[in-house]
Amino acid sequence: MPHETPLVALLAGGLVLAFILGSMAHRLRLSPLVGYLLAGVVVGPFTPGFVGDLAIAAQLAEIGVILLMFGVGLHFSLDDLRAVRRIAFPWAMLPIAFGTLLGWGLALGMGWSSWQGVVFGLALSVASTVVLLRALEDHRLVDTARGKTAIGWLIVEDLVMVLALVLLPVLA
Image (cartoon, rainbow, N blue to C red; front, top):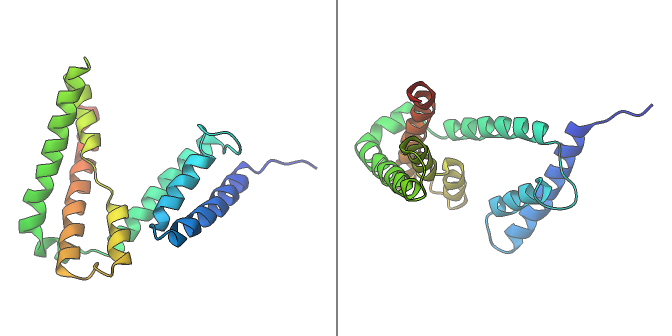
């Protein structure tokens, strides 16, 4: 009785490879995240060998983002954000504005429309909250004033990006 198990194959292949490459990265004194990213590249559709089902991979990626953001939420509260708001809000807006303007200018130089340039610029201005949180955890800085400020800054950036993602379809 043959049956296909693409979800199990993708999860097993991806997790085993992530474990192996994450361990190798750790032995090289790199963050295991480097190994996890490489595992995704190896399992992805642009490299030879095992290629997972792209539809399932996309759904798992969405679940992964949800879980990662849940993890960020576990480390931060609204009280923490209020405590660092005078630094986080203005300084988070600066790289967003700079990245958006840079992307907009580059896109115009390539012949893209202004709207495409704004979307490209917003994509350039996004920082990885999860990567920074992991680095702060590795260095035991999450509960320090600098760590809380950095996380607050990135949460403000994430909130701005969520707002942009909600407004872009409406404005387009």
